[in-house]
Image (cartoon, rainbow, N blue to C red; front, side, top):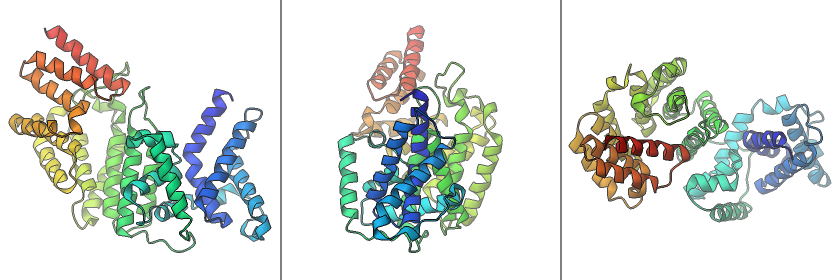
Length: 409
């Protein structure tokens, strides 16, 4: 298969796997997700075989029509032809695609399954991520993810998946899980790839689309949904400044704020304000969005209110404890000239079994040592960071810092 066809199929798989799956469920009466998955996979296999000879004029429509016909063939002996429309119209099927997809997501994340299983299932069946990608995202091996999905499919056969009944989109545990999944989706898509672009723009768009659907549906927790939506917009608005002209990572202090998307920031501000009016209590997403607001609305890096950001990170750590939050709290304290308080938090993180091997912690220590003119210690910290798991861009950044220290010596 030529590279062009491979790229088209890969993009369609990522963008349409979940939608193809939900359309099968809604328009054929097939309730077994594993059967639907097999049909979708087979359609892509047929496309991989046929498209190199002749690419369809409308590849998306070809896939939707192919899975419809394959489902029809598999069900015709059960006298269920009536479930299919006589004329296939892709536009008609896509009218409620997002809500269908959201409904499938809610059904998939039943409380009978653990949060980890729910997350794996959502990433596989809603976002169309391959097992290898999910394993890398969750920091585990492919065999573990395959076993989780296999067990889930086996257990699912014992459940009656009724996609026709009304779904309570206000169900608090399920909504919280949906927001967690969306947050993971966006974070993964927003990471920088080796080439400097977003790792997966479609994943970011999927995350935003799910939130937009929830907002339009006016769920009771709309304030929390809008806060997460605002947070994502703040991040996207600043994405252009993460690299310089020669594709090197740029520290926040040196980032070009003139390229930030002012219109997107204004929209994010609106959603954050609405969130504060509608939320019954302050939520972690709202706090993170407020921190992002302080970053994006400051005219310069020096004008950032680090004291206020430090207070917000302290609140966030109370609501949702995390070593990453603690590190960001330490950074805000340090940049706000509260060096002793920041170092106490760094020492606490250095005792954390997991985090003591994270490159961000060693880079922070290196900055502290460099500011204290302890260049040998700073150099050792950067070298330790290089021995951690880092991306090519991060490794290049750290090596540049090491070169700067050598020049000072």
